[in-house]
Length: 308
Ligand code: AVJ
Image 1 (cartoon, protein in one colour):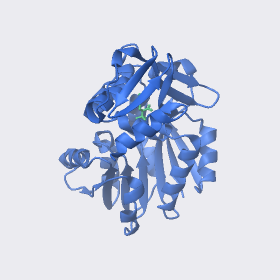
Image 2 (cartoon, helix red, strand yellow):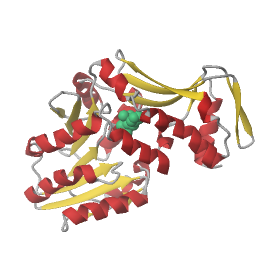
Image 3 (cartoon, protein in one colour):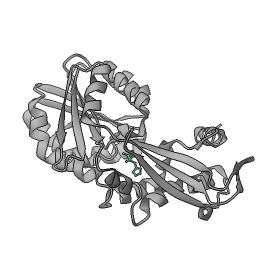
């Protein structure tokens, strides 16, 4: 059975209905996500770019290798990283950029875009799930800088995040670096608004999950009878997104029927926020020697550098 179908059936059969957030990103979902990234209320990308522009020299000052492999996990089109890569390329004798992503198409875009700006940069694209393709990195001798940007770590629960960081630590040698973009705990209103924007783009982003099920899995969700609700819990740092049924109803997906009570919820996403203290202790716990944080002027976001 198709993995998407399998995951949707399992998710909608459980006590608390849920759909994994990785399924947001079909063609339509990726387009809506681009729209989200341009929203004033969705402050994350602007903060990250500010840090990349203003703190790149300070970050580089920590990393003094002659040759380096810069490996980006979930790289996407790479446009955000161009000036950062350019700086490394100027400073070091040999830089190899290794973007990894589920989508081979986006990696082709990535390579073209970056070669256009930095024609003599060596680029090796690795398509696929990075937990499966990381063995391809084992053969490489250069010291590493691993990148995981965009607060993608937020989509993991705290335990999954630690597991992920242990996995990253395992593919590193002593002295290698890991740079991670992390959205920080802040005024809870600011966070809540980022996931409940006034134009309803995030609402469309969430509802597209149901439309995608209709399109790809022969579902018959009545989209107009579902609402979107985003919460933020400042105690544990979890921003959670839900869809909820506005009436009692049955939904068919292929030949399976799912019952929704009025106001029953489907959990669609976790976007966890961290404090610098939490990052320090998670870093220690997962095998890193030290970490340093580079923040934007509002102190909303951190590029956190971990050394093994
Ligand atoms: C791409 C996972 C970082 O959780 O903030 C944006 C996705 N979801 N608005 C996030 C998202 C709703 C985003 N990440």
